[in-house]
Length: 140
Ligand code: CMP
Image (cartoon, rainbow, N blue to C red; front, side, top):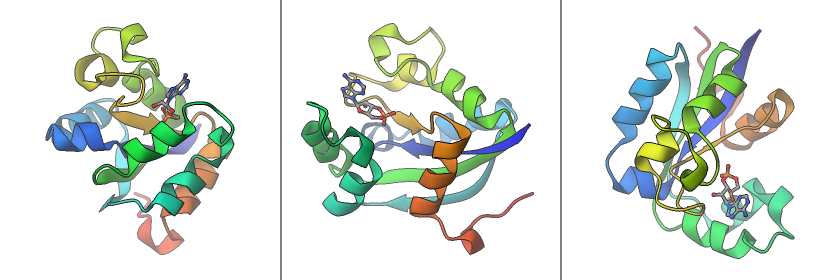
């Protein structure tokens, strides 16, 4: 099915200057960037975005990391976009990520793991609405 997913290029990958290399992987896989913004997240924004992880031991470090520099946030659209994007990213822990995936190639640790992607279609809708107004999304 034609799906949308939320993608975030995290502060570590933005600092490594690989936004374009990561976008090229999306495009080669048939995913279209239909919305995008670069943003310095506030603490409140990062906490709200990761609210489901609030009770997890890594929550504080995750929020600190996500506000350590600007992120690049985009909506990707394509056939099976949610799973396709997750396959491009590789496992959450870069030590477990398959060769050739974004995390294997660009991530340094489970915290500084280069990218975020929605885990399901329902989550994607919530995450997209968290960062983008409908008028900022350009279906094509
Ligand atoms: P992300 O897909 O952005 O969702 C939550 C993030 O928490 C995850 O990527 C990791 O960067 C980070 N994280 C840190 N420790 C863990 C852990 N033990 N399990 C899952 N996510 C973790």
